[in-house]
Structures are given as structure tokens and as C-alpha cells.
Length: 511
Image (spheres, one colour):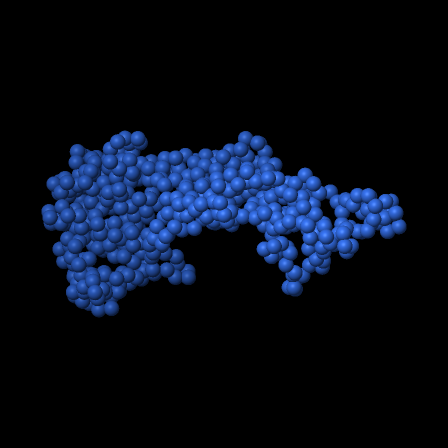
């Protein structure tokens, strides 16, 4: 390198760089603080991470607007910090040649994926392109600086003022520089929805615009401090339609599956909204906070009732209620724990006799006797097994829900049969079984039957095995216990409505 070239490099200035950071203000608090490496910037404090992130981005943009254009004579700021492109690679796949800076000097911005810091720096365009996540916000108008790794080649006979178009050697014997490579075209920024990249050439354009807008709307919804289930349901419905169209124009099967999941999410969000508002839309009436909040939870509860109705080993409503509660305790693995209080709370006439009959026919397995089970206490529960519910390699469980769902359903059923007014009225087992069944057969406002049309009598007696003549007595007991109101029992169906008091225990039918 000539002395003039060396002195020229010495005169170059380091690239500017500064960082804006977002950190927690204190432990146990949602507040955050914003700090900037520029000495004139004071620290800011914001009440939440979302507000802090917005303020940090605004602060960085203000710096970028106020900053002068990138200086052509600056060398890479990332080189001063030892970036991966400038560090020597000594690994197995080391680069065959030393990294060469090149191109005009640019002002680039890098941020981490979690949105905790933003770093702005002056560097060459090659380093900016090689840095993951870097975005160029300004470019100098003058050609970029030469590097010490590959100094400018000596001038040829064409004259000392001949321009050099690249740092490649001149073509041998011609005295001409090597042809310049065409610059790589800058890719358009990626836009995503549901972790899928929306192709920039997707047609029709209206579909692409809809997907981009939906992605922005979903991200904005995630920043909300309060949920809006009606809005969320609308977004999922729009997503389902857009993904269905996307699947049709692209032929990608997984997009149809995504559209189906969006439809299910829209139904679930709409159902939750109806539950919270009592099915009255924008009414000012108080929302119903149900114990089972999701439509699928109600579906699972009805599936257990239907299974027990078809597979109960003993006849009669008392046996049906006991089998139902034991099935809910053991539904996931076929095993569970039970204490004596769980049985005495069912209102059974002779719980010990029923347990002995269930163990005698092989439906239930206990480590001891029925008397031992009734005497067990919460600190020493009795393990029970229902062999027909134990999954095997060649036999799957009859239920599709998992461990957490099983516990939620069992807790819900226990709440229903242990209702304070049912206990005070000393309701019998068949009355409690009817209450449990009716809780699964209402609409969102508590009216019995699909669409409030009532429950067919033959279906009701299949779930609650009593004569139709006895059913009126059970309905009267539930009316006196403030469970039912406006009831009418005919030879064909039961109509009526569950009282507002027990609406939290209902799991409405899907519309």
C-alpha cells in the first residue's frame, strides 16, 4: 500500500452508532424504562411494555430523521464492535477469502426479535446486507471507502485518473477493469399472517391485501389490554374466508386446514361472547360467568352422559348417577381417587350396596372393601379403577379429552349435584341426575332444548332412567329448589327454563 493510500485510510472516521433499549423498570412491576446511548437523551419511564415499545420506536425514528446523511468517508461501525463478518472465521467452514467491505456507506437499523433493543449504525452496504435483520434507512451519494484488506489496484497506462469500478483485478492483457456484477435486487419486505409468509406476487391483489390487513389486525388485537370476543370472532371468520380462497388459488392443502381451524376459533369466540353477554348481544345485562366456558367442554360433558347411558352396568337412576360420577373421576386413564364424602354427597339410598354390586360385576376395582371406601378421608383417598376405561394398545379410550379437561368436567358435575339448595331440600339421586342432565340441554339463556324448543320425553328418560309418571315429581322438586321455572310436562316433551341462579352451571348447546 502506498503512503498516500495509508494516510487516506487514517483520515477516515468511525461510523456513528447508537442503541435504544427497553428494560423493566423494577422487579414485580409492569413499568418499563427506555434508555438511549446518545448522551443528550434522558431516560424515559412508561407504564407498560406496549407503551414503552411504541415510545422507543418513536425515539429512534426521531434520531433517524434528525441524523445527517451517511458519510462516504466513514468505515463500518460494526467493524469497531467486532461483528461476525469482520471477525476471522477459523471454523471448519472458514471463508476462502477475507471479508471485503464495499459499496456505499449506509445507515442501517437492527433490532432483536423480542423488541428489547434497536441499534442504528453507519456501515458499508455489503455489511448491512450480510447482517441478519438489518434494514437500510439511508444511503450516501458518494462511492464507498476502500479497505485495507484489498487496497485499490495500481493505475494502468491509461492514466492516473482512470476510475476503478471494483476491487477486482483488471482483465489480464487488456488494461480494462473486470466487468461490474449486477447488484442484487432488494427483496420486498416479508409480511406474515399465522406464521405464514404472504407471497408478494400472490393474485388476486385483493386477496393479498386482505391477508396483509388481517395480519396487522391480529397483531393489533394482541396488544389490546381488554379482550373483545365479538371482534375476535369476526377476525377469525374473515381469516377463514381468506385462507379458503388462498387454498383455492394456490392448491396448498394445509391452507384449507388452517381455514377450518379459523372457523372453529370463530365459533368458540362467538360462543364465549354469547355466554358472557347472556346471548343478548350488546345488552347492558350482567354477563354470565360459566364454570364450563368453552363449547367443546359442554360437548365433552354430553359425551360422558351419553356413554354412561349406553354402558351403565346396573339399572336405575341411583346406579346411573354413581356410574356417571365414577366415570368422570377415571375418564382419562381409567384410574382415580375417591373418598367417602364423594359418595355420601350423591343422595344415594344405600351407597355401600351399590359399590359392592359394581365391584361384584367387575365394572369397578377397589384395593379394599366398599366399607373401606366409604370410611376414607381426603388425606387418605382410595384409589379406584374402572377396567373398561383403561386405554390399551388395541383399544383406545372412549373419550377424547385429556387430564385437565377430565378434572374440569368432574369438578363441574360435583358442583351441580352438591348445589346448596339441592342439599337443603335433601334431593334424591334421581333429582340430582335430572338437574345434571338439564344443565347440558339448554340454550345460552337457560331455556330447555335446542333453540329453546324443549326436550323430547323419550330422550330425557333415556338419560334419566325413570318412568314418565315419576318425572313430574322430579320436575316439581327442581322447581321448589329454584332450579326450574315456567315448566310444562306433556306426553311428548318437557319445556321450561333454568333459573338465573343456576345459569353459571349450564353448558349451552351449540346454535
